[in-house]
Image (cartoon, rainbow, N blue to C red; front, side):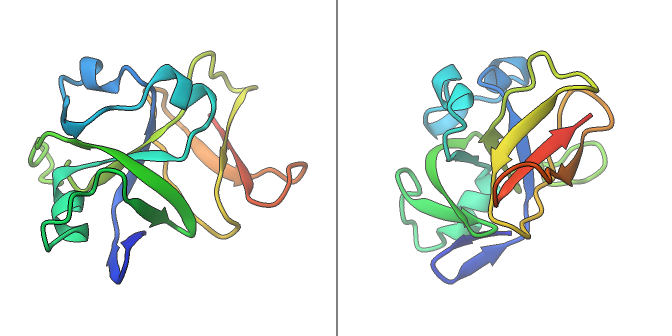
Length: 148
């Protein structure tokens, strides 16, 4: 769930690295895509897809610099990706948000840490199959580890 003011949307949240626009030939239409520094520092920044930007900001408000809630955690919008449209399954690829995540060196014994409030459910996608989330009992409140 992504929220801005009184607008709530159900979207796909994708965790990815800074090379996503080049790998997928999907550049930002406005703003910038996150950098390696954002990824390494687990910065709470977000990229919006076209559908998300249009639906969250229907009055034409510029989303850049605005804060949206993903679950109950605030993320600053730093970019809006160019439109991709529907994939081969008919899913709207632009109804997604992208979060800065580090998958380098990701193995079945390693984990990715992201901070979200307790109870938030975020689905991450990676190039590796079997990425799943489970609570990290040894971590502080709001820390979830994502395992392959």
